[in-house]
Amino acid sequence: MLAEWARRGTPRQVEFLLSYLEAEAASRDASKRASLLRRCALPAPKTFDGYDWSAVSWPDGFGRDDLLSLSFMRGREDLVLMGDVGTGKTHMASALCVMCCEEKVEARFFTASSLVMRLRRANDDGRLDRELAQIGRAELLVIDELGFLPLDAEGARLLFQVVSQAYETQSVVFTTNLEFSRWGSVFGDDQMAAAVIDRVVHHGRLLRFRGESYRVRHALMQGGAQKG
Image (tube, rainbow, N blue to C red):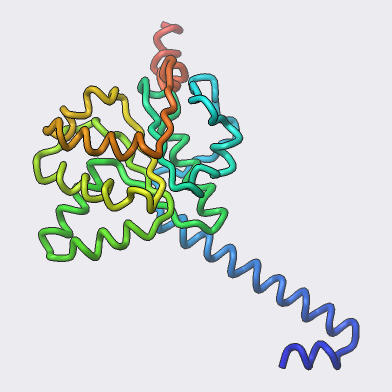
């Protein structure tokens, strides 16, 4: 019907139709992006505008352009953002999620503790498989603050299920202050930690973050102390 209308319409009518269709498509795209961003559940959406890259040490064969192109996701590669507190790890992970949503790619953001609590509730309610399936639909999965809080045996098992499910099917971004050698203390089981590390390292990149905390450098309290 639209094709017939466009064929028979005047040039001005055809121009109006094209403008209408373009506006409709743009509106649908904007709605899709907004929906993905809400579903991602970022605590504070970030972008790379003004991002301080000075704390980041890149692995061989992988740099800023590779990160910003999201090319690592095509190979279902993982990223481990490891290092000092306040050096931009969570900011980077959040900005990657925002980039995905802008590209109409589904991403999900969890802290390790919130993810475990979510899985525990689902397990108690008898809907763990459904919850895992929902998480598994995201092409990018962020697990923030791994190691910030220790996990009990059930929590470690539930988190392992997510990592195991994501292996070679999703890209997972971990942020952590802990070296791999200390992940056993997080999972409470050296063998389980080794199994997680094995999966992550196989298709993963390690980005190290070093430096003074951004929050400390820009703290209002610090400025007040200097004035006093």
